[in-house]
Length: 268
Image 1 (tube, rainbow, N blue to C red):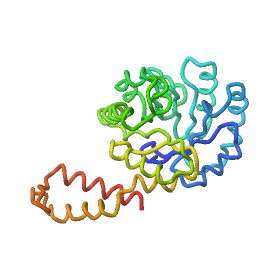
Image 2 (image 1 turned 90 degrees about the horizontal axis):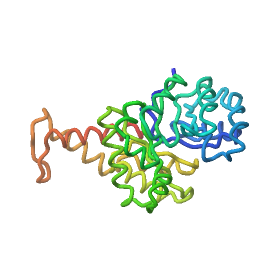
Image 3 (image 1 turned 45 degrees about the vertical axis):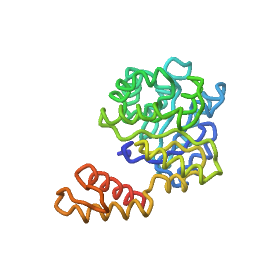
Image 4 (image 1 turned 60 degrees about the vertical axis):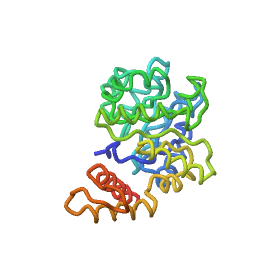
């Protein structure tokens, strides 16, 4: 049985027209590999790339996700047929804009759907998308382009918060954050993953194997955070409200400490 999308923290993109890279990506250490039939492949090469996936995915042990073209595009119907037959953990729908489009992908493929929200229309129907998908991801670069805005933390703050809130209301795992385009700036990747964690995101889309290690560090609690969490749980004892370092420790603080230690254990 394929692993749940819940377990995916770091997912690595690989172009579908470069089948020799799929095995390499699977061995790189990400939690899953997204084989991309959309933006990473030239429009006139998408048909051939799709036809080569049966052989390219054979024998791959890592969880595989297929990013398919958006509903209404010329490639969507053929992508759905391919996704239905391939050994996938999930299907990622590019430019997911309605709950119904996500539901149609789920019905046609019989697989969990990761909704890639990357337009204003997608943000407008987050409740419907969250209800019809297994998980959401943020296509932040396309979203910024759609709105004519800068691709900055400040400009994307509202959209990230909206995705996190919609996922929580739908009892979904926390969304996957968008890509960092810098492939060799480890400090920036780690910093952006820490920001994603601060915003409530549960993982990140990656475009290069060199981003995996710093992204892992970014999603793991720091030693100071883990030390604080252990002290909180020790001080809390039976769960009654107590004081520690001049601050009140009550149920929400204890819950945060437990989440931090859970992240620490997962990273380890």
